[in-house]
Amino acid sequence: MYSRHNSIVNMTVKKTTAKKKTTARKPAVRRTSGKEVPLPPARPIRSVTEEATTLKVTREKRLALWAGVLFFMAIIVSVWVVTFKKNVQSHVPVASDSAVEVSALLDNLNQTFREVRSGLRDLQDVVGVEDLGSTPPPTDSEAIAVLQERLAEIEQRVELERFLSRFNTELQQQAQAVNN
Image (tube, rainbow, N blue to C red):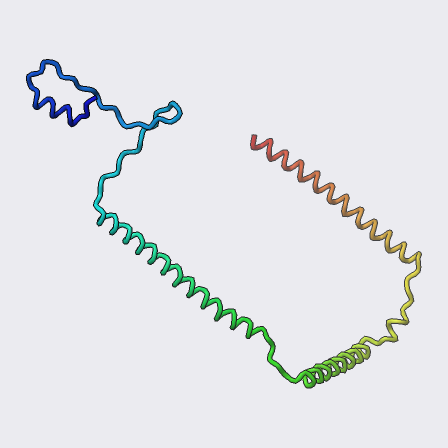
């Protein structure tokens, strides 16, 4: 088999030959387990300096990317530390003398109880505690009479509601009949 280059050279040198023997060039394939898999196209040939510069540029890009990420992460962490410190300081109570504080709380509690007692005395004077105890509780027959009156009122209201519901339904049916 002749390669393409050799066949071109042979054609130019031997112009006198009657029949030219040429073979069609087949694409490069890789045979794996009986299947023909086409090879990927070849990369263009580049010089070593071009590859070195592209590697250098990609390395510099990655370095710049990581520098930016680290810079902003440092800013975020520093702001978090400062705000965390302020939050912790604002929630920690100021150290004070606990004995003085407890005595102030007890004095405040005693004063509040005195005010409640005086308010209760004033209320008892206005209402009159004796009047509340002098009214006799209702008897069973009186309570039954009051409950029967309430039951009669409730039954009347229920009947009125039923009537209004029927009346409303009839009005709606008449309105639908007129619309249709």
